[in-house]
Length: 243
Image (cartoon, rainbow, N blue to C red; front, side, top):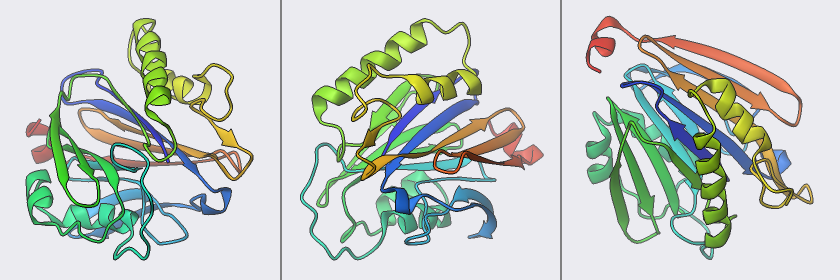
């Protein structure tokens, strides 16, 4: 997994959309809303390991996971910790920098992590040995494709699809971004944004996360069951004013 896009309709607001490409047996079963580390979290739960690939908290933090760092890697099992559990544990830290500097990433399979933290946008790549941290423009447009599934030429092609899509939009909206995540591509079922590689790996779900001035709106679409789940989290007055 997976394909992730980020756009910002207005300062302090964003729409992040994630296609999860996985074995169909690992499709998440439910959207979880729970208190964890003193914060209210919303996330779709991976039934295999209990972790997640995307989560948002009431303190305006969002974390989204992609497998792989820069290129496909040879797996060296067993790994110390699931990447999906790491996503949930990241919310125990006061801010993104504290997580980057203090968390023990040793023994975790390579990954790319996208974090939105109090108005700042970050990218963390871990190649199994080293951390690569990059600050991104929170008012920009961004797309990521998992390095484990998509080689560099396919990732570049997807960046072109996204750029053309953005050029033709009059405004950013959840509906417009879902349209991209459902329909973008050139007819290559192995590499279109909704992909299927012989039902061994396929796009099993689409998650839409919208941050407005006052709310976090979470929508989870299970493409295997055609089921949609929604959750909303209201930001406190102090959190809204911190934008």
